[in-house]
Length: 413
Image (cartoon, rainbow, N blue to C red):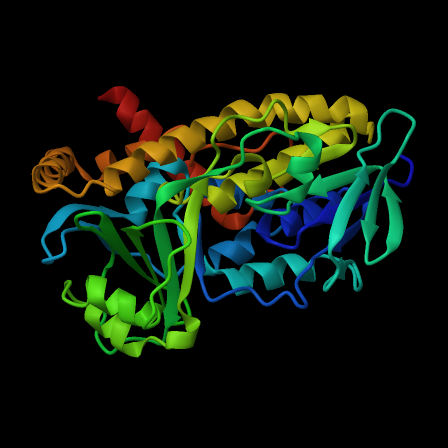
């Protein structure tokens, strides 16, 4: 294969995964990130087994598994503390071939950057697509006044992607889902607690221990778009969630007001015509923004990156030949995840007393079927495996054996 070059626009999880996956296959990669530094915000990211297996294809899966902080029970609760359903990472591992890992985004970013050569990531460098390229013609990007060309451009520039707008003008942008989200990380609590997500009337709260002893928490509430609290976001969280069950009040008491993040949630309004044009591939939120309710936003971006690298490898670097296959492989799957996540999001947004009571009763009935029943929403998602050879991790081998044993058990029932 001749020397091949790629420019990645966006230094988030999806963009860095694409850079690492392409670099692993011999590409020369440059990542252009508009932020002044790769200093990820204080938030966690859920990495289900599908994302871990994708990361295995270039040797990063075991490092992610080492970030796991919760290996016990958890589940879904009501604001007063009553458990609606319980499950465990053991049940997830049996069903999907591995546990769900919740890691700090900063750790994942550091891991991915460590797989790239010095100087491959250029921060403080806004980039604009000036020519998508085509057969016999490279793609062209302008960055900080400099004209750059490459065999491939990967657009990983997020929900409000400028590249997507340039490639598909007039296509509806992702729309506001009707709720906003807060995220925060706090120090180790005095009292241990099980990981949980709690559903109230038009509000949810989640708390997950990280492997270093800190706690990642997230919250959601129905709210108008582009809102903010005049007294600060921590004050708003205390107003909305301060009387919920342990450990919520303690988490709020330990939080730094300056470290609370608030973001409106957007999701794709309609499928794009394609995830590529010319020599440009769209990836992650730029292609398929989704609500966070399946924990798959980052996971699907990681899948995108690994499938893209695999298909380019299969095509011997022939970008115009590989990119239609990329759209064919990724568009149907990711839009299915968008729809499934959106359905759960609408369920969490219910706010009337009768609707919430009916929701709680239905979840309780489901829980009586066993801990695996609560995991059914991830069937066909978390059990995904990357195409081609996986550079199998030690944990992956054991997880696969457990998954196979569970599958045989289900078949025998």
